[in-house]
Length: 87
Image (tube, rainbow, N blue to C red; front, side, top):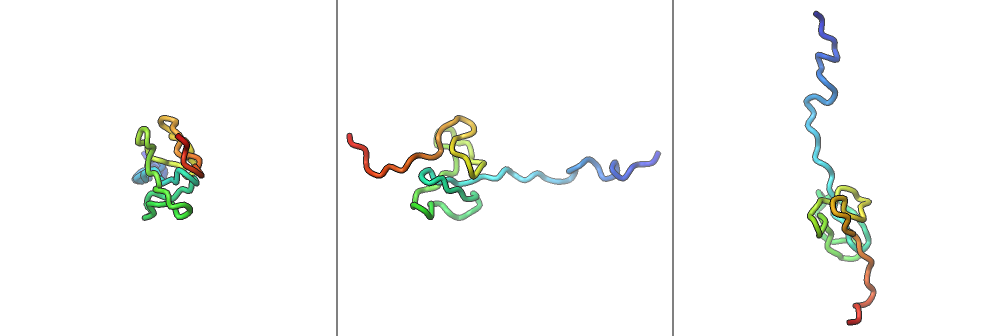
């Protein structure tokens, strides 16, 4: 019995190791995102510490457009407060 070329090569993607999902750091003030592989820890726009994961549940930020956590729904961005709250 002959083996077809397709069968000889295996299934599509055989031997290919899937890459890990991309992760991002996100500025909670201006929503600027950078790949987590970047050395940036603070936002170049406003100096805010960049989030690597949801502060509520710890889920990684997997989209540069994320504004809410995909696991728990917590807001990842917050409006900039121009003055301290009165209290």
